[in-house]
Image (cartoon, rainbow, N blue to C red):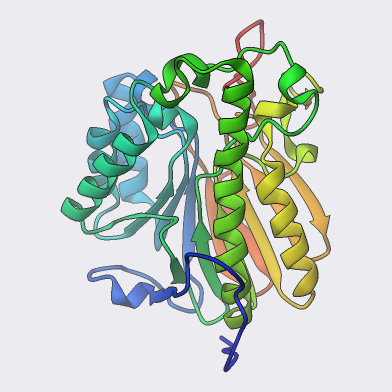
Length: 325
């Protein structure tokens, strides 16, 4: 780990960050130099049968992972507290670091869900909701940061698209808004993630050679797929977060000797994109109702090396179904 004596973060409400080691979390089992990360995304546990959930939790218990990282769409608001508690129990005593996805707010509002999740994390000591100023030291070379992100409506046809966005009906913050107001809110949510990452990522890169960024929505359209094909202009507004992507790209350019790996989900189609020699995006695949892991990864200054498993290759948003936006 390298530490700079001083670093200008810039104008931000995030004036201080907490660097925490895995050893600081009581009971965490890990090889501090070569921790194994089990990456999960788009579990949609509300759509899974009890039998499949039990089997999935057993896979987590049996995993040799040191920590678990989840990049959103765990459930829906009504069932999210229960499913977070079940995931914490399956992973215990290992730490679960997670971001939320848009589906996690379905049936409620963003503020209410955030408040409920904070309460769940207080009661489940091995749950850590990313996006609150923390920098997780995975080993001497690598750290983890995260923020939920959002499809910010800026790519493709933007507000001119006629593709349906389920968020507009399912999340209270969007109800009653005009289409223009809805897209303004999408942009605001995307910008929140950009502002946060603009604050925390440079500091993390000044201390570590490799930083893993956990978020929900792909930060580059090149890794956003629909029905196994690159997203067209119709769906790009809801399938990518241009605000966060632009910030991450510029920061990575400022730290050419460091690596940034972005982990995302949302599209349900596995994809990878090398944006820069030192900046990679991995998007996880998913099949709602059939929760599974993207794989087990060893972290180091060189990046993420997959040790077992393989990303889900099947795309669920096909055959005339609506996009998972």
